[in-house]
Each structure stands twice: as structure tokens, then as C-alpha cells.
Length: 271
Image (tube, rainbow, N blue to C red):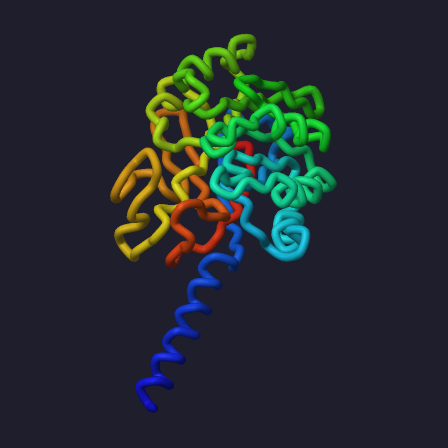
């Protein structure tokens, strides 16, 4: 009887542990300080949401929406895998987007799961109708008080183009002397971002390494394999800082371990 009670307690504790690891939303804040930040953008806050994978955070995504609202964003970046190709439910993910567009300008690039569904046109159309700035290998100038920054986005390499080709297309008509913020799904293309001297790159895709261990970090990530290099936090080389969000949802592996769903905030600071 005692063994049965212990087994029940263990199963219940394990269930609670797994649910907490999948559902407890956290916010991670970073400050990007540079002389290239225009004075009018000092304090500008970007909230990044990535890899939702059709996960659910409350009815109508209420918990996720309120968590993002609390970050007081000036812009919201969605960096791919808004949906999951294994359980495609666009309406579920759009519930979150509907909340986002009410609080700030929303910019979006697709990830490998959108490409895998072969429903990119449907996704792009739905997001555009909600007022999202869809960024398929394109860029736009954002202006405040006569000063500008560039927001650019590239699609996933599964679309059939190299990261360099997509960057060339996106930044073709953009000046080199302007702070550039890039939305891109994949962190493993870091060297290409560095080669192009992109100021800040927002990425996801790695799911934080799925399972995170002290002193080791993430254990496995798509595109990087075991003990991946880029799973969470910021990475700097040359003129480039890359932000990697652990993301929100899961795909093939259903649970995150010591790897809480993450919303990332980057605040720009004039040096």
C-alpha cells in the first residue's frame, strides 16, 4: 500500500513539474547600448515572441497577451513558428496576435514550420489583415523625431534561398549607417549575420535546447544537434549582437525541462 501511495505521489508531482515547465511564462530583459542608437529611440522597447507552436496560454491566449502587455512594448517581433506543422491551428495562434496588435506595431517572419505546412499565403494574408507588418525578405524605415532605424526580416532557408541571398534582398535599398534590427528564425546562421554587420538579430528556433542543465545549457536544438552553441541569451561578435529566445511552445518533443517558456524584451539605449 505504501508503495502505491508513493507511486501516486511521484506521478502527481511529475505531472505538476512538467506542466509548470510548459506553462509558466517568464520575461527576460536585455539592454542594447550603442552610439548607433538614435537619441529619439533611447528607451525603445522591443518584445520578442517566438516559437508558439500553437501552444495555449489561457482562454484566447489571455495569459500570454497580458504578459506581453506588461512588458510595455513599443514594438513586438514574432520570429517564426507561430504555428506547428504537426497540429496546424492558425486560429488558436491568431488569438494571441489579435491581442498584440492592440498594444504595439507587430512585425513577423515565418519559421520552418510555416514553410512545412505549405500554407504560407494563408498565414501571410491572415496576419496582414490583422495589421501585422509581414517581412518576407524586406525592410522598412522606422522614424521618430526625424531619426531612423531599420527593421528587416528574412524568411526561413526552407524557402529555397540562402541566408545571404535573403539578406541581400531585404537590405538592398537600406543605408549602411543606420541601426538595423533583423528578425530571423534561425540562430545557427550567426556567422552570416556577423559577416553582414547586422546590429541586432532576433532569433528563436532552438527551443532553449529543450532540456537545460546547470553549467551545460541546452542539450539539443534543430539545426545544431546535441549540445548546441546558440540556445538562449545574447551572443556578440564584431558589430553584431544576436538575441536567442527560448520560445514558448513545443513540437515533436512535448515537454520542456528546466526551460520555462520565455518572452524576451530588448531595450535600446543611446551610449
